[in-house]
Length: 140
Image (cartoon, rainbow, N blue to C red; front, side):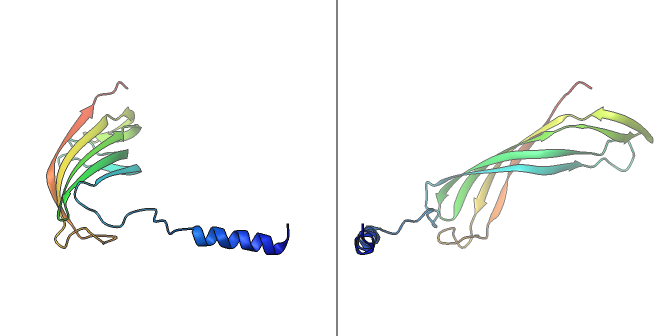
């Protein structure tokens, strides 16, 4: 093959190519989004009377959002917090290597975009909702 035939073939390929967009920029009604976060933290802080325990846990979770229209979305979230063994203070004494419970949390939110969500990379929003937090007992 000569260089002339290679350049001619490459030119034909480039003329036949079209633009491709990997992701649509607008959030239109009916769009569903799935989010996931692999690592986070939950810090549970006890009260002032030393009758409650302070402990920390590692968190991961997911969310699912459904855009009803450009200004409103419905979102559901689920997180699991892994309770690892740790030293804690309870009633002014230290308890060594105590197994913490797993914490599950469930949330349902209504999300409002005052200026809309279409054509914005990071839209401003206001969210409100209800949730449930449950402790899964674990044997030490």
